[in-house]
Image 1 (cartoon, one colour):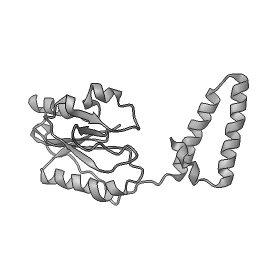
Image 2 (cartoon, rainbow, N blue to C red; image 1 turned 120 degrees about the vertical axis):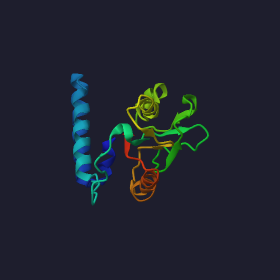
Image 3 (cartoon, one colour; image 1 turned 180 degrees about the vertical axis):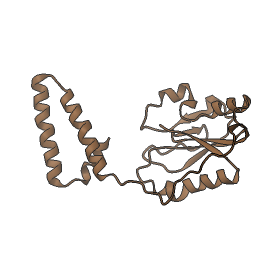
Image 4 (cartoon, rainbow, N blue to C red; image 1 turned 90 degrees about the vertical axis):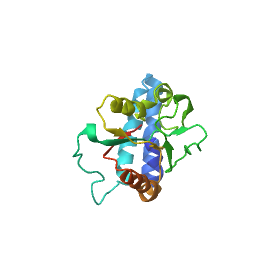
Length: 190
């Protein structure tokens, strides 16, 4: 919840927030209209998060133009969905900047998800919703993509402190993709 940022506000701002919330709860109880509380929480969460969240700043664009025909390109897929293979260490759902390698030929029944910050039910039915590994191999088979990189790379997208991702694991995976002569990457987000 964006309301976790309340701890970064001044004591007076937090007091005002809870006073307004209390008044709206009283009004909602009297009228039976609880949407005013929901609207207030959503609105305040957005305002607080926008005010205190640290923006990510890059010195340069972290991508480059795609100059090759897709049918002649080597493409990789990545995900922030917390997908891993049975037997690998699950992601820490409290925040984890590490990654897992997933071979493209991994059977569906060996794929698992460790993520508590999105509804993972759909991933159990179709992993391609967040990690398009089977769609990529289909596109290679149809001649639409030249080659698919194996392994794929999976991250767990809940990373409260992204410094480890930005300084260690992100550059490490980027270097591996570069060494493997990957022309493009499809990133499945949650």
